[in-house]
Image (cartoon, rainbow, N blue to C red; front, side, top):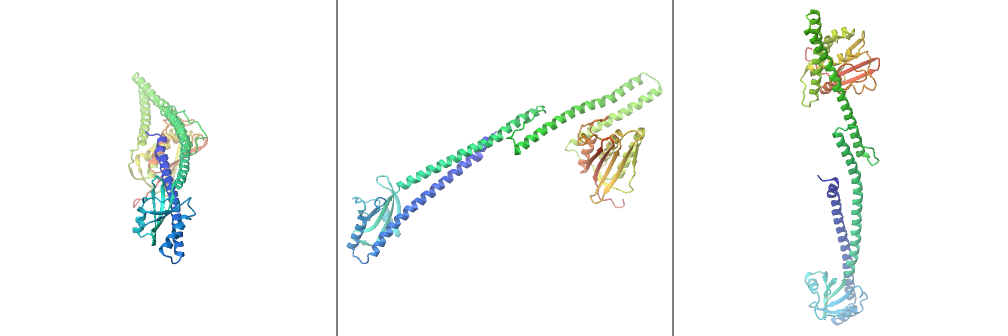
Length: 472
């Protein structure tokens, strides 16, 4: 797998270098064109000056014109920068401002182009016999002056190319400095990411191996998104550790909850096996049936919670009367409440409250809420069950309120978590309220808990209502 550094080199540094190369080439080309254009303009200006001098001399015969051109050539003031040449009818050099007149013809291509091309001034660039780069401007006279048919001015491009070379060095140095700065800043930036990632990876590996106490130490360089990631991973480790503790507590609690009824069943079975007393047999049968129901309910809760955790689980929804479902659950728990001297107050609304829900799951919610209220109520106390509707929001809420010991403030935000058993928790697996929360989420509803420690606990579930069937 490619490292972040390699990906940065391929994705950013190479692009920066390519852009710098293109920018440098463009700048060099721009400077070269500018310098060469200035040289062409200088040559053209001097040709135009000579042509203007000829035109301003008035009417002269060929000999006089030739003499004027020779004088202009011999008296040419810029011999150190340019060379002025007079050309014959075949392009041969007749005279030069430097006094050098070669016998052979030199670079007559520009002369031929000037004669045949129709351009007033023909500019060309070529290499001299000394391998010197030359730029020339050739102008064909409108009327030949005896042996002189054209004028040529040349200049060396060596100085211009030398200056362009110096500019190229400066541009290359600037580009190199930019690349070096990019590498340094990029390396610093990458290190600020890679080093925290290595620390995060090491900590994550420890967490994956079950070391939930591992934490990423805070560092001033771990800021912004990296810092947020570190905080999230530390929080994840904390939650995993807490869940691991809850799991262990759950296993211990469930083991205890299973052992208690199993011990009772085993004990009474042994007692019944060794006696023929009818009363003892009847009492043993009752205890065994009661503890078996308790075991069955516990196992069912565990299985239901496991099913609800499965993402493939689906509800079997139908239109139900919420009032009827709550009434059935209250009636079911009336005898159990009376055994503990607890009164369940439920004023059944005389209206039909239709909801679209899974009948079995709604009953499970109500059973868990009422069972929990009975479990934590004091003797000779009251449990209130109320149903309220909100037509504006199209919702219906069921509140189960007991006046028992309440929920400790430290536990109220956690009691809906799976396997959690708060301070003063009684028998059970610790998943009853978690099961209620899961079922309400699947129905798109809410589960809210309000409690004042030592006074009361109010648990409320809210369903969305649907339009009633005609006639109901």
